[in-house]
Image (cartoon, rainbow, N blue to C red; front, side, top):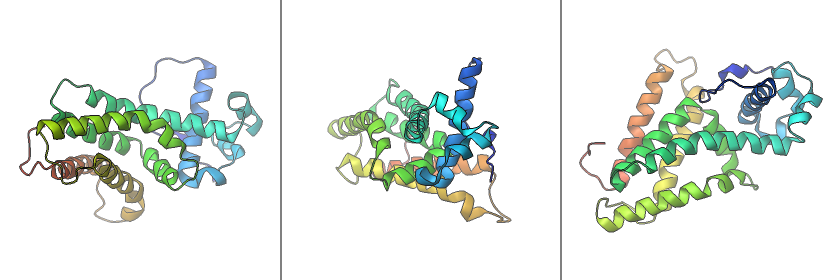
Length: 219
């Protein structure tokens, strides 16, 4: 079955050359294929068919499927981690930056749900390539968490920062990945934008509880 490549949501791009547009189309098509079928079941011929190319043409831009997959992961992580990094670098107390990075992550993943489906596939993979690309930003989140703990700004339920990170990330990723199937054909299904707003609100509320902010704080 041919996939509709235009359904991939990415950040606005400047005017590109023909070669750059072609690479972008290949990445968008591959992103949908890897998200829906996984790495093993994705074929380069299927990716090519989705954008009206022949399989051999993809090899001009990406020598093999593994390299194409790495390029897709880089595109996903650049988009997501850019939003998180902006929140981390905001001149504000650690408490506020932690809440804002959760908000930013929830919003970005809701905008680009393939992040969720591919990330969940990655955590069960032996390769764990996504972990390599997210390691540096995770270290900064941990440092921010520890700074807030030392200053007394936050009183986390769990002293281990990785539990905070995995609890929030797991909730956001699973919700985004599973929501389409759970509400399919449901008469009271929320509109995508309403679901995204609710996810953002719930993620922030969960972060506040895990950080020991019993009273909702202005964020």
